[in-house]
Image (cartoon, one colour):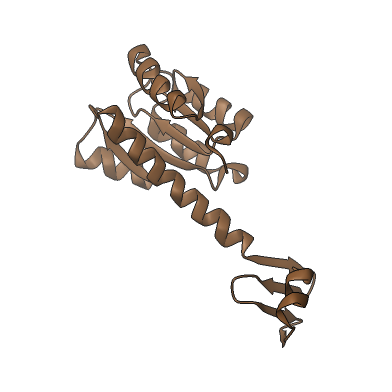
Length: 169
């Protein structure tokens, strides 16, 4: 997946954070969608199906913890990576964030280069999940394990020459 195809939802009630972080993410080549509160986060996530969501904890209308919980309830967003970017650094806030379904928790202030590095690391997790899903193909009772060059039909292993295996897969 190319950077220009990666959608990042950035949600914070501070306009300066939206501008600075949004600018840096856009400069890296990502598509950035911005929201200002938790309710907007849930609606924008449903609409755009981002690959990564960056949430503040303390926001009006709905806080980031509740927004994260609601997003995690949506099956179509189950693979979306969620991280908090917040000034709340207390242990209980971090625990609440992870309990709500977050993949990471980043404390403000953070330097833009460090944030971009963290974003890249989080997106690598997503890429690894995609690659793992792509390595096994199921068609009815036929299962093709691309990485292992293995095929099973109704649970019974079938051996094929490499070229035939590649044609089949």
